[in-house]
Image (cartoon, rainbow, N blue to C red; front, side, top):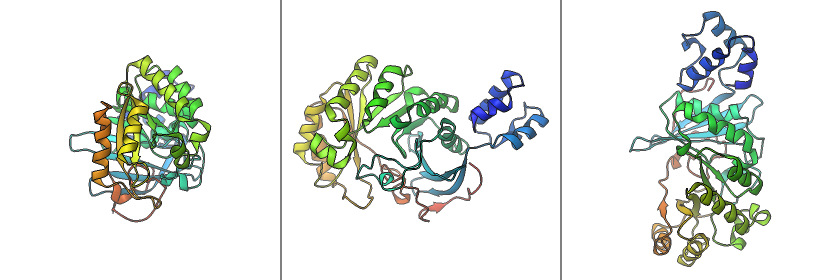
Length: 337
């Protein structure tokens, strides 16, 4: 829902009317007709004046593990993908996109291989979450979908501040960055909610990281990690480090020791990510991942191996590329989000 358009449309009505519309929407109702506390004439006016979503569903696919990946289109035709992940412990986590495509071209990420469109508005980001809220209650969110959130800082933060109304607290919201320093500095300086920070790292040294992630030439590890440590010191919260495990590239025990020395035991928690194929690399085998994490544990750097969800429908980490291939079980959602 375009919340600015909503406010403009209701500008001559009591202020509580816009709040009512938003509260109904955040609860997961299917449309204006369900907002029974609004006069019927007002509901009819909203149907005609304010589209219930800024996004249209193009395809929706369901994985064997229950993960749902939705391909949306913006009103001007840009593709956007988002994911709902269901876990056995009851968690319902959504992975949100901040851009259509991504201009930073990390070599292991499918999103970087598609054409960059534009930044998404705050309403387009929130509408991804609202789409899944209409399917199930949700309690976690990660800005780890398409795009670099720190390149769209204002809209991402505006969207993140709306999520508690959907049931996702700030402490269960994580914003990820590859180390785009201007946005990262603003995050450290300006965000006063307990939103979590994640760094997409993937290499323990500048030479390798620059080959994998061209952004590192512009903002090297020393500067990026300094901002992360500043955030950890100010908030007393560890920064999550995302590290995708690529066979023969960044997965050796020696690189594990180098990563431990780079990060230290106090400010970071490492999430090792089994690689989800996008065509260029092979994933590290389990024994290499085990040997790598052993080096981190020996240095007392907290580390876990991330549980992969939705790989069979290209919904896992690094796989979002606006694919319409008909794999996985399709849902009938072909209407508005």
